[in-house]
Length: 118
Length: 118
DNA sequence: CTAACGTACAACCGAATGGTTGCACGTTCC
DNA sequence: GGAACGTGCAACCATTCGGTTGTACGTTAG
Image (cartoon, rainbow over all chains, first blue to last red; front, side, top):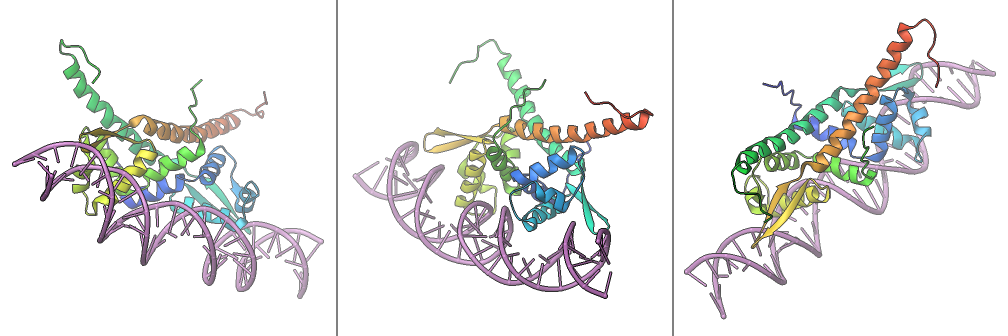
């Protein structure tokens, strides 16, 4: 039995929603790639206001993809891959559902009659 | 070298957005689990109007997670795990970014001399 | 101390979401 | 042919989203 560490549906909603934006995925990519950064440093990368980037970071933080660490007057933003793994595991579970379906189908196809198109 | 089958950012937006809803995830789960179903059959499962479910299916279809196959007066909805794999691969890439970051750090901590650039 | 910096937050705005109801149209069944 | 079914689509509504500007407040620098 796989320990299916199911996050509550609302958490999954937040997670996938956070990933459903190009800017936010870029932020996560940058952060996981090794560059911790203050919010302003991050904001400098994007063609939008500081407040907009701050909101994106807030969404990522609520989704658990990112953590903020106060350091003087700055807040250092750091990537957190833990929730990411939850999302990936869910997708893998769905893919396994599909393959399991096929293994059932294989049994059917193992019969002498060849598969026909439609 | 992994064939980095990069979907355009807009497609990824659609994909993750489609997954960011409990009802839609449930539909995908049900479909990948092996039960192809007409839209009305699907709709019967949920406590909302037929049109609402139909919209959810449309979102899933635009994201490529589902295909519809006309069959008489019904449209049979079938799961399509291909795009799902794209999403999973992206998450895995992000996770690998993180682990790569650590292995780099390990190298630094393991060696008295700083790592050289190549 | 004062000025500049980094951040948070509120108010506002247009567009998109997620839901509803109603209607039109093709298909199936008597 | 006509009624019932399955589907798609438009109109509408409240809420959320993604962006803006402005303001307040703690921290750092001169």
